[in-house]
Length: 384
Ligand SMILES: Nc1nc2c(c(=O)[nH]1)N[C@H]1C(S)=C(S)[C@@H](COP(=O)(O)O)O[C@H]1N2
Ligand SMILES: [Mo]
Image 1: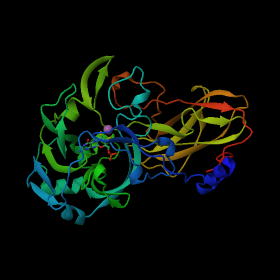
Image 2: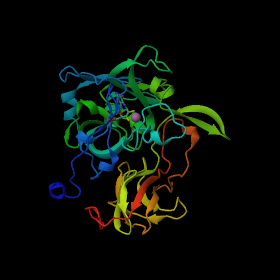
Image 3: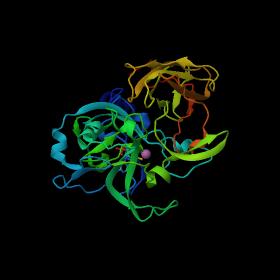
């Protein structure tokens, strides 16, 4: 009876189509939800599975009242309605959004902040208007240095460092990044209108940068002639620049680092001894293309190349797999994956302590148990 229902459920959910186990709640209010990374199947994460990171409650936006203003150090300030933005020439970019605090739970000693495991990351196809086109229309004045992107969401931060009363979520980009064609004001996520939690009606998409730069519910663009000193730029989302081990200054977190994550097996998975098992995961590299992924079974002494899918392209992750002949001897086994990018960066083994509570990109070991088993899992023999 049990056997029958088990085999029925295996038939109802053939490899690769198992039901989604649900997003993990990291915080109830404001809502912060993690993608269970071991559920990774496709390169594009469906909207309903995409992680959510909110600092404040999702703002109620009435589409017909919503306006995006462009102001500051420009010749011709102006505003746009949602309908007007949707009519402008748009571009598409496939981009991996990774929260700068992703993988924080693996830090020792423990640090403050949401305790994300591997799933504060996702990859989607975004479509929208290049920020450069909007800035061109406004006419950037001489002496401009940054472009501030401000969201409609707001609130007060009562934990240290406290905010000066109510503030909006806002981040700036240096002018060269802001006018690069890849930065878009997105209205579409995987072919659908942006879902409310992901920034409806408009969000910035800043390819190559950690996701805090991709401001949701965008309502104001301000060109400035001095560096922006907003809360999420100075008190939060910063790391120490050091010279000869001395902290020199706090810098805003920016470009993503090269990183691979293992989706399958999951931590503590039990795997049959002396069998064939397909290890799977994703790797990304911010501004650069992922060129390789390697696997180590001996704590990083030796590395074997994994099979990286698709073509190298900047901004988007690449799925990879590795056909593993599991050990004959039962016991604990540590797996590691590391990625390399087109600029020659290799994912490091060790944590750079200058990064505070952000940019957790060192190799993340996964521990599994090898067990002598007669019945193999349905995903064996390099299935899926
Ligand atoms: N307006 C606004 N934009 C925001 C945030 C926010 O709280 N408010 N969170 C940022 C952070 S820290 C991350 S990781 C991403 C998460 O995007 P997602 O919720 O669509 O996955 O949005 C960024 N943009
Ligand atoms: Mo984030």
